[in-house]
Amino acid sequence: MKREKLERQAITAELAKLDGWSLDDTGTSISRSFKFRNFVEAFGFMTEAALAAERLNHHPEWLNVYSRVEVKLNTHDAGGLTELDFRLATAMEKAAACRLD
Ligand SMILES: C[C@H](O)[C@H](O)[C@H]1CNC2=NC(N)=NC(=O)C2=N1
Image (cartoon, rainbow, N blue to C red; front, side, top):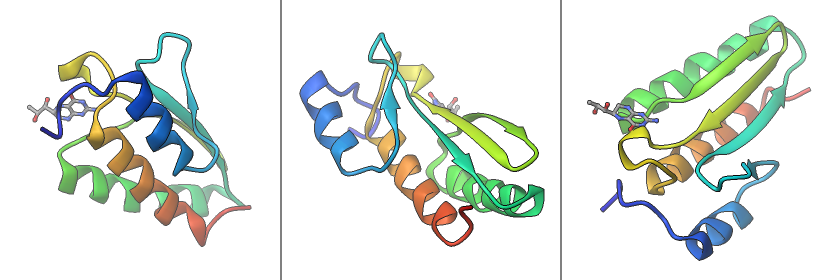
């Protein structure tokens, strides 16, 4: 159930609950850039997000350059977006909240 590919309408509804995420052109992934005060804050965020990813058994594609972390989420197994992507995005927002620039 959690790994079922979501329809466009469900994706739009889930996106509306999040802050700062955007859907890619093909509608198969969501992305967001997080900007922190410095590298330690960025890495702290990544550590907390990594633990959430392990709990969900759902892992991000991400890039870190100093204080910036760019995240792209999708479910490879489903070839698109599933509930798991939105759960991980929500966990990431919580992990970022107290650390943002
Ligand atoms: C075997 C393992 O459970 C799967 O490969 C999981 C691991 N983490 C995953 N993460 C993401 N983002 N997509 C997946 O399809 C996925 N599959």
